[in-house]
Image 1 (cartoon, rainbow, N blue to C red):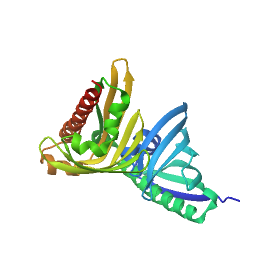
Image 2 (cartoon, rainbow, N blue to C red):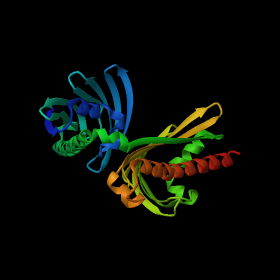
Image 3 (cartoon, helix red, strand yellow):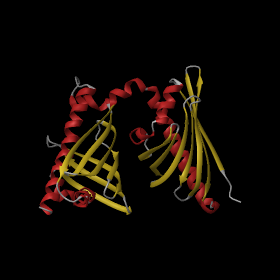
Image 4 (cartoon, rainbow, N blue to C red):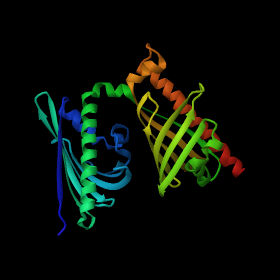
Length: 312
């Protein structure tokens, strides 16, 4: 008989219980807020039920699963169950529960899981990954909730688009074939790419900015052929504490619309060292919008030229 394993983790948070619940409920923001989470896709099923497709790091690997969540805002409780698990996980379910307490809230996260074939090594792997990720997530939630009033000033999003008069697969290929970027993109000085699992790319890249400086980033990219490439930077420029993004491709009646979307969380401690003691979060947002957006716009322009010349 397969044995069900149980784990419980909790943490006290010096923030209102409703704020703690709000952090947990906003799953689409997890990639930029939680270290292990790489990408989330969301599908609303009912007013209080949703399906999430989640990609996350676990013990140095990228794992993917599909979960169904039931949200009860009145009780500040979210129950989840994986509909499609990734080996060695055979099944996984659990619950987030937020309880009010004097001075804040207590957040409890429980898991119950089984391993494929009840394999002891699988049980040990899942237990280790669950413990590490749970502790990381609870710590992140505590930090986010306790700094919630400032978060709106640190998080921001932006995007740029271009219309390409060429087949979708050609322009998608340009952005998917990142190993070719050093020879195609002037702002890319070096790029190392590996794809051990089809569709999951590990990338290390040296990028030149408009002022001539270089910075090194490391990312994981999740590729959806012909529709999107999502990524999360594991190593970011110092002024960012988190950076995620997506390249999306949409066939329209006038060509292929290619969009570069970014979500950034600022690292306020690094702003003065880079932009000077008088710099603000507003000037940091402007700087990053210009630098990261400038590179994206240059990439979009070169992707357009590459694809249209190939099919001109």
